[in-house]
Image (cartoon, rainbow, N blue to C red; front, side, top):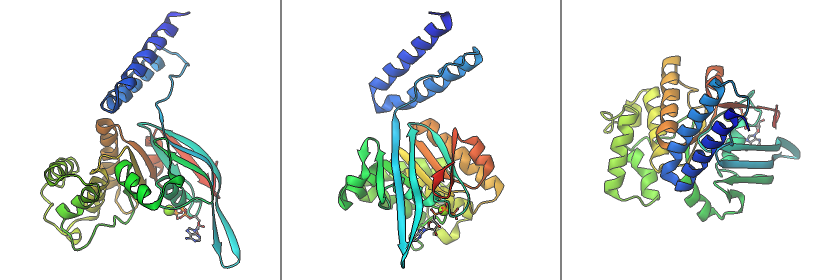
Length: 274
Ligand SMILES: Nc1ncnc2c1ncn2[C@@H]1O[C@H](COP(=O)(O)OP(=O)(O)OP(=O)(O)O)[C@@H](O)[C@H]1O
Ligand SMILES: [Mg+2]
């Protein structure tokens, strides 16, 4: 066995040991993983480390809509895995099925066939109540049009998911203060959504999605309505979220700069991965 191989085995072992620890070790483990990977790359090695655990497993997923007598095959057998701590960009032309796929991954819609497992749970098998509980605990969503409640001030908008998840008032307020600071909105908590700029609304929607500390963040064109400076700020925020919380992130985007920035680009065309 060569020296390089020994180094690799050792980093793999410490990586796995870290993972055995438990959730709080996950962030450290991912950082260690990235460091180890970089070391291997700089050592000129072509071998790859084992991947982090799978958070989303999609198998043979199809979605067919019936419109009148017409059947529309929107997803035609998608299979993919997303690993813990990964930042994946989902790209493809308009109508290729990106939003449909993201909604199925998040359990917001039912597949016609195939399975989606999130955190080893087959979400297609959950009943409505279990599913919404699971979603609230495990997944954060960010949509292009924010969906902030127009009559609630930012503080209350941020509190809502925490109330549904049964997080105590004091804890909610602490988390909101931390998140508002993280997204630079600490002095906007008394504003109504209409009193925020587009970029601020988007950052608010991201803060809201993170309140329950989801393992997985799903975002549909989160920078679609923003100028390039604000888009950049959002992507830097995503990087930070991943680094600090170990969150797995899947975003739908038309922005090639963001797709290049992600760990991996998954491209859809006509309901299939290309
Ligand atoms: N509820 C529905 N009933 C019938 N067809 C639908 C429905 N929702 C979506 N579709 C069709 O499914 C296809 C994929 O839609 P989807 O929203 O996933 O595309 P997309 O890749 O997100 O596009 P865009 O980049 O424009 O957002 C489209 O052709 C759309 O017309
Ligand atoms: Mg879409």
